[in-house]
Length: 546
Ligand code: GLU
Picture 1 (cartoon, rainbow, N blue to C red):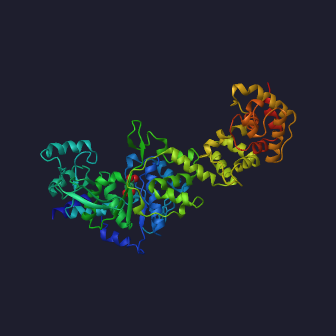
Picture 2 (cartoon, rainbow, N blue to C red; picture 1 turned 90 degrees about the vertical axis):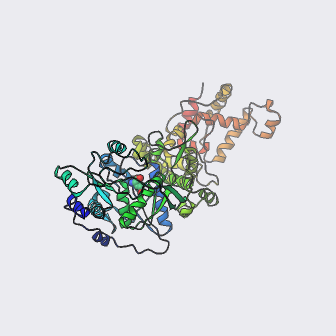
Picture 3 (tube, helix red, strand yellow; picture 1 turned 60 degrees about the horizontal axis):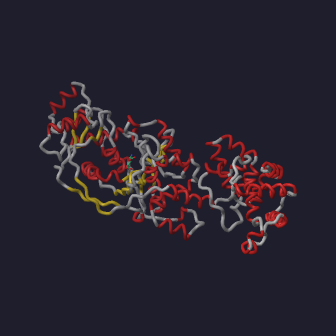
């Protein structure tokens, strides 16, 4: 009887009953195979690629089963919450087109019948269930100082239970009504802890949808359900929310595997059916010492999802790369279907890799080169301009002012060619890659021993220069002049008797290329000349005279 009295004493204002709450959240009517899943980020900072990985898996899972995806903001850890973090989450999800069937808008409107979708607005629900557990003797108030912190309470437990290091029963688990009342009358704050049934020696088996059957040590701690500020830590909040909101599959990071027995114990204490978990592997990187390590926000800029916007990666490049990491079958599918949108690739839970994928920027860049190569020139120009508007305003002005020229540049070697050039993997690199379009080159990649020959050829080329109107015409003119000045125009002849010639046509093309772009290799010279215009081309040819 003490339990009921204790519950009323510590929660005098909690009148809401779990039955009433359960009635407010009717069971979802689902079709065979339909998955209800969620993305449940904590707004604690920037969005980590590992979190986004879960969002993306959940999104595909819901989409591929014609299921339901909802967004739940897990903001019960006041100390760590950053105000802007929530906005960052929404921005990133929106830009990657991860859409939700149910969520709360940033201005607080719930879309869907299972809200509120923000945990800090569900405190009365958690309290009602906590009160019920206290009534049933499955949970108890704990008055230890800083009870939700680790250091102090572990110290207290150590002295009290030194003889059994497996168990972490709390010193307050068996307080009588009178003892509780004394603490309350003293105005002391309290946390609510679960009274674990385990002794510490049990092992628990459970099924993971990616990894199959798993086993872990049973929970033997009286862990916190409500902190002294009345807010629940992750375990309690998620058990209640995923049940009420009708989650059928929860995708979360594999760091939760070791606490799954505690979560299952909680479902049982609450009288809930356990949900199905799918623990996705953590993304790794090759560390400095050659070992695998977790990708880290502190060390790796690419762990932060904002990085991909700042560098101007197309969203499809990032999503395709994630698909590649999730499922090795994607790479083969992409090879067989080079032009299809990735959305047509379907995967199920059993296709998700169970091994920690390695993050490899070179691989992302490789995928991204192909994604960009599939874009039309107009699309590339628009994406580049949008990027510049956000991250490089002066560049955006130039791109807009001379739009015709830059559209031509974006189309160059991209359209009307069976083999589009694959040299761009993000928009940030475009300016440097095409620096010679923006201004006269400052450095020239010409070999020292070629300088005199180049000057001789270029001054004659400039003297007789006529703006070409086609690639063929341009090349014919160059060949003609090359022949006149003692260069071989037939490569076979040149190869047989190189000493008879100053060089071959390829060599004179290199001289022109270096004069115009500063580089030995570039996209089609005729197009570059066309973009630069006659005056600029002549100025560059003249600039290279002795
Ligand atoms: N808020 C938790 C996290 O960000 C959610 C874990 C889960 O998806 O259940 O890690």
